[in-house]
Image (cartoon, rainbow, N blue to C red; front, side, top):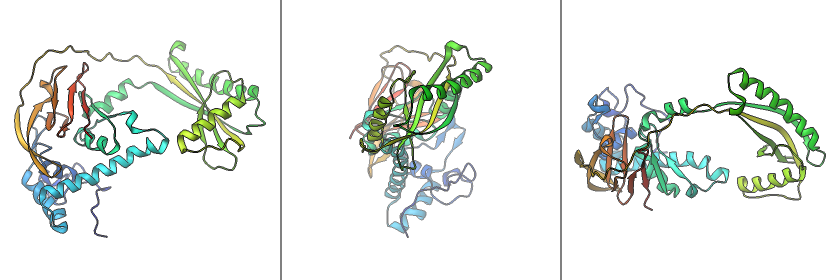
Length: 339
């Protein structure tokens, strides 16, 4: 209907964004970031060179002219829609599940996460953004550190008023034995096994159940039902204490704790690094003379205010005007979000 859309299709790695110079003429988020100066034209340690003129041309032709906007305003519009899409995704796992984003920090990882992290956090009123030392490979690091996990379950269709603690406990015992056998077979020591119990429960007549953590051993069905009411209030913002509650399924999450690599801890040096360059970067439709730092130069304890850009081999960190950034002892960049 003539509105500005962003995705879900992608330019992919080839031909990639227009600024790659491989023939694509449709504007992408990357082209918008290049046009606004947020993303430099020399990436991956100089191995990837971007053409800013092609990025600007694609933005002007694809968005600027149809909407009557300058290249900078069109790029800003592209990123606003992209950030809104990302914010909606965060809402699905926070507000929609009864969690207040203001109680959390946003971890920005992936090659482009730190380009958009502060804007997404600001839209959701998240007070801080954490950028790991190597955002582009944080997922790979997670794969190396993640614990082993198996999920076991058994159907348990019974009304809460008819449920017996001994019967529920027997069901858990059966699947916990299976869980222990599985992890032991995989070489996990008994002392490194953690079993987490939950029961899927619902109000009678509902089609969607809600998993509620339960203790071991179970001694009171009434206590389980009370926990369900509280969880239902948190998740959906309403509860029906007078409604019958049905049990649907018992679940055991079996976790095999694996050894974790110790992350290096750094001490403040008191060094204030100089920017490696400066360039004009656009924020909120206004140009800003902005310092560009190298991530490798930023020591523990160094703090700086936006606007600033931090470049590194696997990502680019954008610190908008007014936001305060500080490097912690693990060399994460902690950005306190303004507004």
